[in-house]
Every structure is written in C-alpha cells, then in structure tokens.
Image 1 (tube, rainbow, N blue to C red):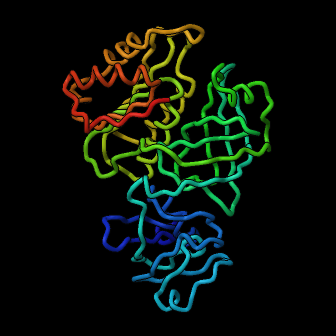
Image 2: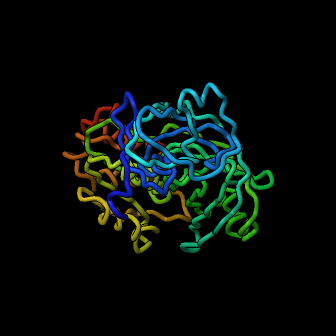
Image 3: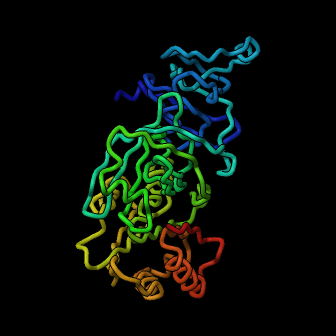
Length: 337
C-alpha cells in the first residue's frame, strides 16, 4: 500500500494514535490496532460506534440505516463503521477502559468450521451475524449452548475479529459439549447460542514490564488471544511464552503457531515444557506445577507481569511457588481452565 493511502487517527485526550487506510472504515482500523472501541454490528445498523470529528476530513464508504439526529450531525458526530479517513484525523470517543463495562451479550452464532488437530483436540470457528458482532477483550471467555448442552470456553482469537471467533476444545468425558463435537453431532452450519463475554483475564495495557505467559495445554487459547492483542497494540514489552504439555506427545498441539510469532516480534522467547502427564488417569498437579516452575527463568519472571492459564490445581501450586520465590501478587494474572 502506498504510504499516501494511510492517514493517522488521533484520539482526543488520550495517548492513542493509529493508522487507517483511505479505503478502510475507521472502526476496522482502530480494532486492528487493538483499540477497545464500542460497536455491535459494524454495518451501520446499531449506532454504537458513534464518534465526534474534531479535526480532518472523512468520507462515507457505505450506507447506514441508523439515523443520526440533527443535533448529532451539527455536533460533527458520525458512524465509524461507515466512514473512512480522507486526511489525518482527530476524534473524540470513549474507549472501553474497564472489562467490567462490556455488556453481557446473547448472540446466535453459526459453526463456520471444525478442524480436528488430533484425536482429542478440535479448533472450532463460529461466525456471528453481521448485525451482531461480539464485543470482548482478549483473554475473556463465553458460554456456548447447543440444544441445552452448555460449556464455557476461552476465546482463542483476537478482538479485532469480532465476527469470527475461535475456540480450542479438548475431548473430555466431563464436558458434554466437547463430546458432541467429537461424535460429530455438532457440524458445520449448526447454530450455537453464545452468552458472554465473561472473565477478567485481560492485558495490563499500560504496564511497561516484560510479559511472561504460561499455558498448560489448551490454556494456550486465551494466551493466544492476549499475545496477538499485544501485537495489535504494538506493545514494546518483551514477551516470554512457556507452553507446558504432556511429554507423551511430540509437541504442543499448535507449536508451529507459537513459533511463528518470532516473525512478527523481535523481543519474543518461546519454550515448550514437556511434563510427565497421562490424560487417561489422575495426575499429581503439584508435580506438574513444579516441572513448569523449574523450567522458568526466575530473574525474568520476577520483574514481569505473569499471565497463567492452567487447570485450577496446577494454577494454585504454581502461583504459590512463584509468590514464595519473590513475585509480587500484583504481577500475577491468572485464569483457570
């Protein structure tokens, strides 16, 4: 893309600046850069993405059914989803600064694709209607309901893709929803009711500390969302990712994806951790936590924000090890899976 096709968009009263192409909606440009903008439909129906033009010129790139009042028009308000920049801009709008301010949403989604990575891990993609995208923050989870069978899963995709949501679902006897996936009773194009988002496992976006991410197996899903959100925000913080998995398997199920982050970030370190673990039997979570703990670079960990996504028992033991070794509890952000 020619550099002259890009314009800078500044948010008034905030240290936020992003580039947006002359052919892209301002909403899409902001979401791609990781900004928590308010929106629902992204097609001009709901009016949730209103902003005020302070400086610069915009152009309308698609029709919208939402009717702005005469007062809003006089106040230079417009819908970001239906307008693109035609010069550098300064806008006035409220970003979602607190995860607790995101409303609980109920959306009927459709299965776009189910991909079986191996015999007990499925990558499930859902698509929301164009009129109702999911507003969420990286690291959050939702409830999925298929004909009364309900399970809660973290979202593995980045908030910049609110219309297409990815989930990593492990085949577990205690999870009835997963059994429907692996018995092929849930198929492409089936409708699934979604309720969310939930949870507060989100990035400390203003922190300048290094970021350490620790995942156990399918705990990679929310970690992936967090890391790719950090990329969108162009956060300069060094990232260290430790991914623990059962040693009976050759590597973590999305190992190539974790390695590929090297190509988009200079200061990125990745280490898989093979742990003694048998999926078919009861395991010693204290031992698993100790194996993870012993693999960490503790000099780096103690000066970092530490994000952990693991089963509750592993999480408790690992958290205790880290805090006893000098990590401040304000630096520990954890979510059980």
